[in-house]
Amino acid sequence: MSDHVSDRLSVEALGRLRAALAAHGITLPSLDLHLPSYAGTSATPPLIALGNCNLATARRLTEALAGER
Image 1 (cartoon, rainbow, N blue to C red):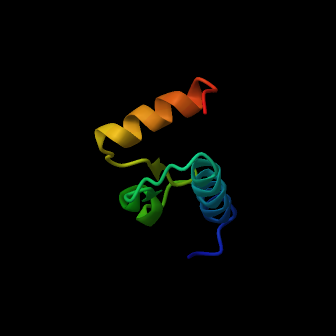
Image 2: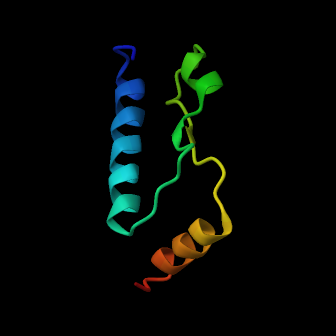
Image 3: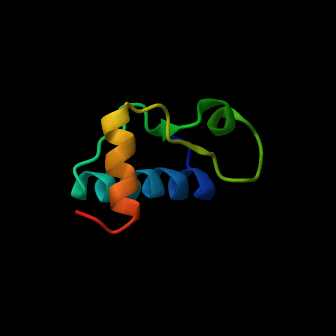
């Protein structure tokens, strides 16, 4: 990881997102930093790639976002 502030913020946000999803029983296996934006020289923070998920995970995400448990 680079020492750039926006990179650190993105990595921290990624960790918080993983933890929040896990608290709802949700795992997105391909959740990670978007490598092209992370490797770029832009002044904006790297993107966070949510990735693909199966039907069960999509339903669980929908329930969590709707406040259901």
